[in-house]
Length: 276
Image 1 (cartoon, helix red, strand yellow):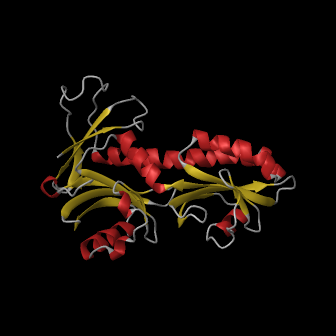
Image 2: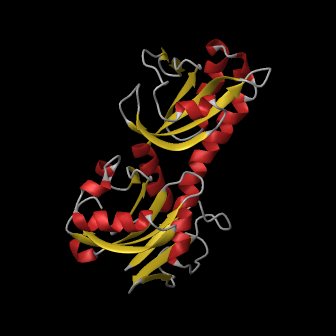
Image 3: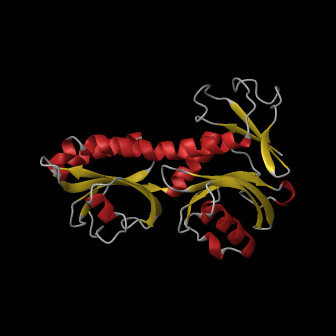
């Protein structure tokens, strides 16, 4: 089974082809046929772990880019603590980064979004909010958005005032479905392969199968539950299991950026379910 990935994570050669084979219990690379795509650029042979690293680099890269953009604003205009001064540059971040709801919050949990202005909800009860108010950045907390009801990953940074105290926070609620679709396009992932991420809860984050975003994998079948528990007990490895009437062989690795476990691998061709 061969996988061709066209990924911007291949920084050294834009448009490089990645061909991944799963043979036995180990993933390794094969030479891609030269006639497969004459316009795709140089062809490289790579271990399957490089394909997984590409997925992680792309996904974590989108999240850290958002964090960096928010941090720049937090150290500049946002130090005024005035929504009127923050709204426009925060909106500009939204035009430069992955699809998300961009927000500004005050220490009491009241918050404003670029699209709606002052929101009726409050963020103070969110598990990540005390960390923000303690001066810590947040990358990758999975929640259901208060303002939209969509499953999102939180990326947020504290705002420090003139005397160094935290006076609020800038944040983004990144749409997990939109980011999953973006990663699929960036990697040119063909039918027969899938990817996903989970956090330590575990709750599903990114997923090629959008219907599984924010699912709780330990409730989705005995064999998948066994594989997920094995993943959570290790930093990286390979698991094989049956799910949705197909056999899956997945490479996985834990990210130091988000704390998520990323998995990428093959769905057995003769049992490939629709849209996978």
